[in-house]
Amino acid sequence: MFIEQGIKPENKFWKYLVGAFIMILASSIGQIPLGVAIFFKAMSDGKPMPATQEGMLGYLELNLTLFLILFSFLIALIAIYIVVRNIHKQQFKDIVTSRPKLDKSRIFFSFSLWFVLSVITMLVDYFLDPESYIFQFNVVKFVPLFIIAVLMVPIQTSVEELVFRGYLMQGFGNLAKNKWFPLVMTSVIFGGMHFANPEVTRMGYLIMVYYIGTGFFLGILTLMDEGMELSLGFHAANNLVGVLLVTADWTAFQTYSVFKDVSEPSAGVDIIVPVLIIFPILLIIFSKVYKWTDWKGKLTGSIEIPVNEQQQTTNKIGQIND
Image 1 (tube, helix red, strand yellow):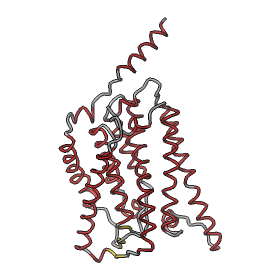
Image 2: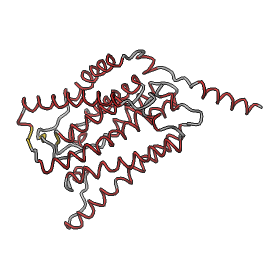
Image 3: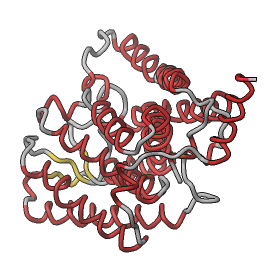
């Protein structure tokens, strides 16, 4: 059982707070190269540092900016490994999957399914509304972008999954001893993490429904499948499409993608449809492929302490009484 792998008497919730702080600190340290690069560029141009997030994202050459943004996730990944192994004394695999080893076929299936659907959806929208897009493919700029994206975007998405669907999911499980509380908390925090994105400023707070809804979808995938493989594949596909296929001036990642969306951003039915229609359909597909059962138990049930851990706790109590 996935969450149960983190349920240990010594895994007190305060350890997860300390671990989360270390991960945030590591990510902040990883952002220093971007700040330094922007500082020296501003100095050489004789201009003030950009004051807004959108200004910072568009200040340097776009491929360099993308690499420096994603670099911080590599530092965070190292921190996650150190925290899991040294603070929680767990195998790193234990926050990824309940299976004996990582199931790469699940990652590939989820990635392929969402990547293909996303590309088809985007191309259909392009042909129906070509005025909203600019075809800006430039092979000289796209090749470095492709290399950076393929190498670094999976690291970025994996870090987010490891933190939310892995580390914090088990952490809140230790705290609440049930499934629904970790699902709700990690989904809301995951959505809230995107609150500072430029998209929220341009499209309004309704887009938070999409971010939080995506958090619930990925959390359900993880709990029902007893591992993060499906969420890892989905998240990587989702972000790679956004980086390589279509970008906009108001998105968190501005890149030399194939297309540029020049339409006026707005949050409407297109924000609600994925959460209420597409994600449920995907859950049905995954449930049929992987034969999920006991939805209520896996999503809202209580967490039972594993027998060996329960015995350890009993022994400790007995030693104290003696």
